[in-house]
Amino acid sequence: MSFDQKAYNQAYYIANREKLKAAAREYRARNPEASKERDRAKYRKDINKSRADRRAYAAAHKAEAAARLSRWEKANPHKLANYESKRRTGKQFPGLTKEEWLSIVELFGGRCAYCIRPVAEPEREHLLPLSRGGEDVADNVVPACKSCNSSKGKLTPVEYLMSGRKKF
Ligand SMILES: [Zn+2]
Image (cartoon, rainbow, N blue to C red; front, side, top):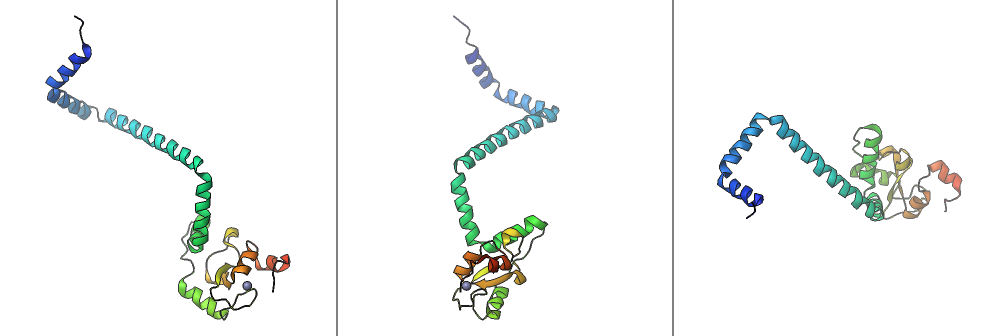
């Protein structure tokens, strides 16, 4: 009859469970650094594994993420401006308030700043575009119609006038 080491270990463990647990506790108490180091190693292993998972996921869904980000940017120009300002200067800008925006629209008589046509729902047009360092603050925002806003794009007002893109 051969000796079954595994069964023996199991039986030994079951018979001495409490004693073994106490010994392990005692070992940890006597060697706190070794236990901590083991926990840290496990943590590093887990976090690296999840980082690698995230990277693989991101690589597989790159186009999807870019489309989502661009939708978000279009829907949240205000937040984007704050984010851009914060990233550039390390400071949080409050961004244009609703009251400031309404008073700018009133100042322009509810008309597009470029084609001077009355607009029911003017868009916030940044004179110096956000992408070029402009901020979402009162003296950088004018109301514009959809058509002017999109044809001006990332140009400054002067570049826009010189571009020949401006239509009346
Ligand atoms: Zn216009």
